[in-house]
Amino acid sequence: MTRSHDARGAVGFPVPDDALAQRLATRLASVEERLHDAARHADTLADATSRHLMSAGGKRLRPLLTLLCAELGEADATEVLDAAVVVELTHLASLYHDDVMDSAPLRRGAPAAHELWGNNVAILTGDLLFARASLTVAALGPQAVELQARTFERLCLGQLRESVGPGEGDDPVEHYIQVLADKTASLLATSARFGAWFAGADEKYADMVAEYGERVGVAFQLADDVIDLTSPSELTGKTPGTDLREGVPTMPTLLLRARVASGESTDEDAELVAMLDGDLSSDEVLADVVDRLRQHDVVEETRAEATRWAREAVEQVAGLPDGPVRAALESFADALVDRAS
Image 1 (cartoon, rainbow, N blue to C red):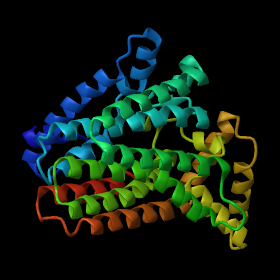
Image 2 (spheres, rainbow, N blue to C red):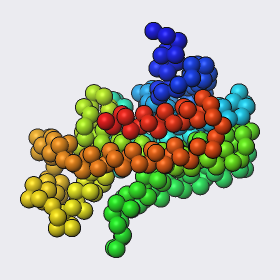
Image 3 (cartoon, one colour):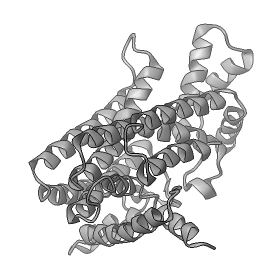
Image 4 (tube, rainbow, N blue to C red):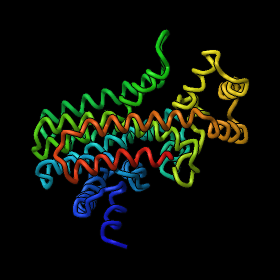
């Protein structure tokens, strides 16, 4: 195995340049150490719950994006590592809350925190991690604090919009895209901007990578909608159909409902929507619904939409200097869609 493959394995997404992959892997290891330090608590319970999801692993896409975009300037700046810790702590905190609201039994192949300690402890653990993220970002200055606060606001608004659903007269698909933009893309955009900012890169580059993050975040979540239906739980660490059982909208189900509402659907489409609206408490019934959706062409439509958002993301960084950073951002966008294929 070549050194390039070793580095890419550590990084977790395709990095065409070997030297860049090695630098990212090394810095990511430093971020990982800082993450565990930031989650450490003197209180035994708080320490165990805060480390639960962190120890379960994860892609670390947000800190990686921070580290990658820092390559547009002075990537070795200590503030870059702190910023990478901030975005991952924020992400981890949001997962504790999301899993409670979605009643998700698994996260990253391990029991969700609320399954082990109950909803109250899981929610408070998320709050603790948000607090640690705030402490870390405070040392980065008022501009960083403001951006973090605005990002946190969008995360909350996205969850709120998802919880209450579209209003009367709202297009459900457009509403869903806005939810994805707030819940997922906002933090990816901030991750990218932080990297450029704290490496001292040109502000126009920071704007470009932030716009990239906004679009690649939507692509990422649309790809996840496909993966949640088409990949086994051993690969995803999630139970297929959890969102369906909890009535959480996904792009395939929204596209299916739009067809039925338009009157241009088949009898099978209407029957499937009726099943989605019925009792999905039975594992057998849920598995049947997942299988039917998996074979429906709304999954291909969702994959095509993910591709479109990924292409738009790549267009946003066309003005970056030609080199390994831009190539890695392009590869990352492509990889998001490939994993849904």
